[in-house]
Image (cartoon, rainbow over all chains, first blue to last red; front, side):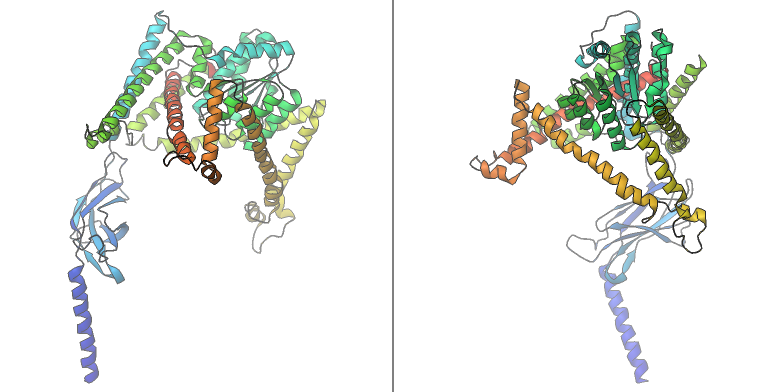
Length: 392
Length: 232
């Protein structure tokens, strides 16, 4: 009898203790769920107001646990957790168009929790337009319209001024120099595959170099990293030789595969340069750590070197070691510049409109930020202006 | 005709679809990125054979014709055969774990201790590291040329390099500790890195972004077609 009384007493004490804990750990409030915007569906946003027990410095709440069910009655399964102070959780649900119900638990120390009311139902669905990208759409429309406008203008015979690009002006001289010296030309089309725009730009430049090489009867070697690039280069070079009326001079094996390994490729190209001592070397496309290995080797053999890349980190190396370097956008302008095709030159002018807009936006942003620093403009407005250009 | 028009058509259609995909997160556009990524991987897997066969053909031709440097081609053929045999056939001479078939064992060619692994660590890796290490010497020789004060720009580059170099090492602040607070050499180096350097980089990047959009548009609209073998 005494033992039974003791057990009951301990049980009572534990119940009282649990009740006390329950009193200071309160559940999160106003739990709600809604479809996540601007996505492909299968995502729901679970939102809540912090548990009144979740206060700064108080350790009553350690975090939140989110539970999901297919009916209001349950069963509820845990789907994730959120940190103390968080009021949002993105739940990746299995299906679109299905009702889901949620509860959020405030988690306390030693496994204690306080559970919210059931919220829902909520359904996820895919959206047909990402409203967060309206600014990007507007920018694309302006840019595309200006490019098309200038292409139209160029086609209708209007002369367009394009500034001189020294590196491209020098292409003819480089090929001519190789011809005079009776040495070959080496053209490296970068270290990325055909799905990269830089490689496509490089292949377009190769067309011009190959045409000149064919006209001057100069040997052209193109070592490749990717076989798809090799095939494209062959097509372009073959066409150039055909156009120059020298189809017999075209040698398929001069456009060959090396390896996809970075330093294997670097060693092979350096080897070609050291053995064959080409008079002109072109590095066009995407390059990485091998850029300086190439350019310094080319420099050591006295070759005229023309580089072009849109890899900002490699530009200093090429600028230092090569005779001419196409910096960033010049690489993409090369095809139009070399071909003098009015439609392509028109696209370059259209691109300039994009630059004017960008410069105007940057100047306005600098002005507003300066005014804000001087206390003459509200910080929120500057942030709102900056957000206009943010693409999520 | 069709040889060029069909690739142009495919480029245009795929290009437009991917532009649309950026703004429409709904199916069928949404999963196109994953699908095309799988396609690219499949095409690349086949294309690698094209490259390997070309490499072998060119190398064997050089050996056969005894062209200058044919010895290097011999090294390529030997290396290709050695690493291929080590990768495909190592279970023939290495101890097979109990209960493993030949093919099960062959799938583990990347595991430590295999012949392929040995080639990787004791041949490939040192050779790659050697090539990479030569970069240090090339940087030195390139810097020597770049930092000669032959013009105003080169002098400016030299001074900037000097400041950034001394601002990045503790001895810089010791040597120039007499400068006023806020004008220490490390402060100036930070300013060079964070203001003019970043401004220049961003200008280049904006130009690149516009260039990429313009080139892509020319390709999508079929204005640019020289890469297909026809120069307009």
